[in-house]
Length: 102
Image (cartoon, rainbow, N blue to C red; front, top):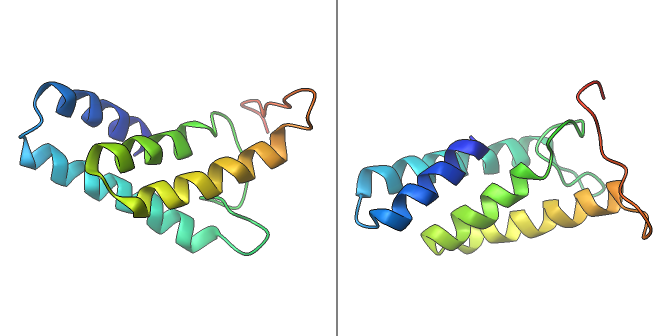
């Protein structure tokens, strides 16, 4: 969903009036929000119950969806999850990236 949001947003930059693509982008964005709502808790602000490889694409895609569709609901969750990811991967001096094997 995240990668499709990024590509649909790129497409809409060229063809901003394409309502079918806007609708599909919203469906994908809502899909990510639903994943977030199913998995988050006060101390776990994420889309699933683990952090895994290529995490940053998830909040990034919601930032893009929020800006493309001018929707605060995507931006709010993007900000929460981005902050959560930074809290769990950056200690102030260096990033601890999660590899493809956990």
